[in-house]
View 1 (cartoon, rainbow, N blue to C red):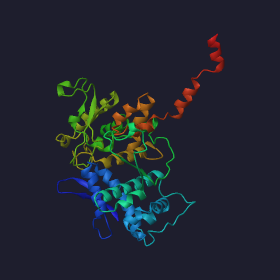
View 2 (cartoon, rainbow, N blue to C red; view 1 turned 180 degrees about the vertical axis):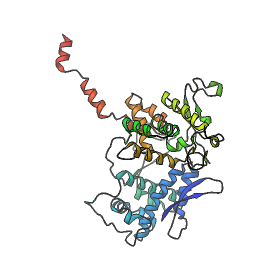
View 3 (tube, rainbow, N blue to C red; view 1 turned 30 degrees about the vertical axis):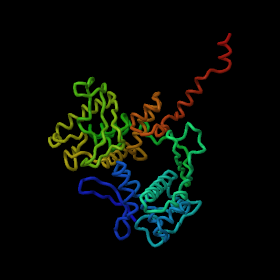
View 4 (cartoon, one colour; view 1 turned 135 degrees about the vertical axis):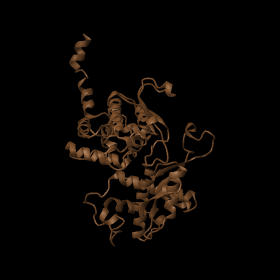
Length: 393
């Protein structure tokens, strides 16, 4: 079992799962098509789900279980996920692919977050299979604690008086709370100094100062960038410099904005200056003139073609090496740095959610936890009892 990308004649792409004979697995393919086209999900979402489902189906196949039997025995699968490393769980593993070769006492093969992500994909596939008639409804109570809303207060029930059902996953690994995996300001400065072009500096700043995702960054069109003080003559009512993040399908570089809702992201003077410098650099490359994409290849590859999202990670890794950083900075760490800096500057959780394009405000909750420096500053500013007593005289 392995995840595999599919490109349809229309140009739309998604990921599916193939078995050992390179045949599409129907239950997985039906679910992944629903995610991509029925829910308008991103191709990257189907890629993540496909890899997780392939891992689950691989375990089922190597332990002589049907996928329904495997879904009913998720605790066994969770143990395999925790302790079966790539040598056992990979698609090309040998004959002991179903055997856990490293048990308790050894370092876990996967983090709790990764295990929970795989379980989410498996449960979602099972729910879709039940709803589409590919599996029996008796599978759901094995995956979820199913309850109705009759025990809830009247104000919390369905407004139409109809009974609603609630589902809570039965299987989940505890994830210890950890600090946001953000790039520090010192690391960001080092990356900017290590950049070899104005385009690369603009890429870094759009992620670190505007919080754009890779897909949003590479999908920017020149018409999305408004750097004027007043853009109303252009038909835009958003004040000052900003970019519009718009979800578009069919981008030749595979870029895809995760958020369905269009948003305008303000830009500070550093990013505006980076745009100006990059435009001068871009004007020196004639092949780039005809592209409507903001970020294009200027030095290698197909000159003038839009930058691919995977290239952003490669640029960051190369800049991290030149900067002498111990570990390579990843694109999402720059986005986390943007959210954390906004929170440290006093931005509310609703502001962070809007700027970063979070569908749920709870997704931004991780950024509002103060860092140790702010905690220390808060304690140090509290006056001592003696000072309070003297003030009361």
